[in-house]
Length: 175
Image (tube, rainbow, N blue to C red; front, top):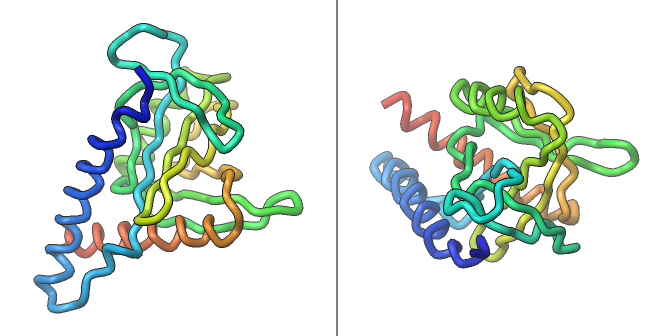
């Protein structure tokens, strides 16, 4: 089964997350930033084709086929902050995960060297598999850097949206 068929359920999860964030913003009397928020889901590559827990996806605009677990191991709710950084004459997105995200990233990378992390992002007018960085070793520090299949403006938009979600989540956690 193709992961694209699960787009509706992804949109449902994204919408529910936004409703919680928006409700928090509205109760504080501030206008909603829901149109400026980004979703990001990270999926672990697997070799087990045919399992109902896995699905085939086409990653990046080059449509690289990959089999990934159907459920993401990290989402935008695990992001503490994000930034666009200069990298080898170009740019990359650097994600700093919160405590839960750091632990999940560590667990996902510790035994999966050589596999990929398929990354899908979404905001109101953009949904795409933007990267599939290879796991080269354990990532215990909670920081993931990858070169997105996106132009700089799209990357900055993704990062700005992730930072808005992270900020809203921090405010909600303080209440």
